[in-house]
Length: 73
Figure 1 (tube, rainbow, N blue to C red):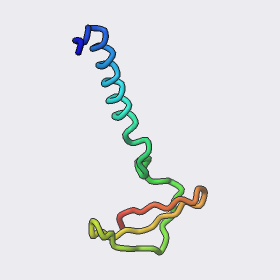
Figure 2 (figure 1 turned 45 degrees about the vertical axis):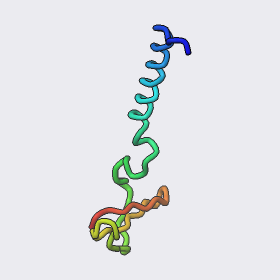
Figure 3 (figure 1 turned 180 degrees about the vertical axis):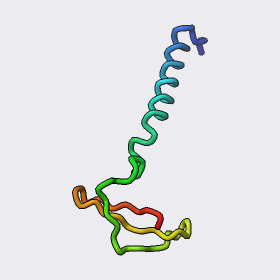
Figure 4 (figure 1 turned 90 degrees about the vertical axis):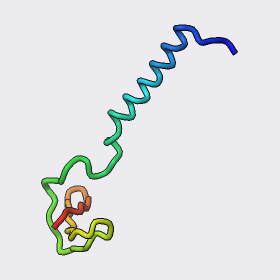
C-alpha cells in the first residue's frame, strides 16, 4: 500500500471540512419548529398533557397555512 502524498491528504482534509461545515450549517434546516411561533396562529380549545415532559400544552392553529403548533400552556 503506497503512502499518501501531500496533495491526497489536502483533498481528504478538504472533503472532511466540507462535510462538517454542511452538517453544522444545515443542522436546523429540516427540523420542524425551529422557525419560531407563527404570529398568525390562534389558540384553540385543545389542551393535553405531553407524555414526555408532563407539561400542559395547547394547540395553536394558523389558518393561512393550516399548520398546528404545540405551545406550553
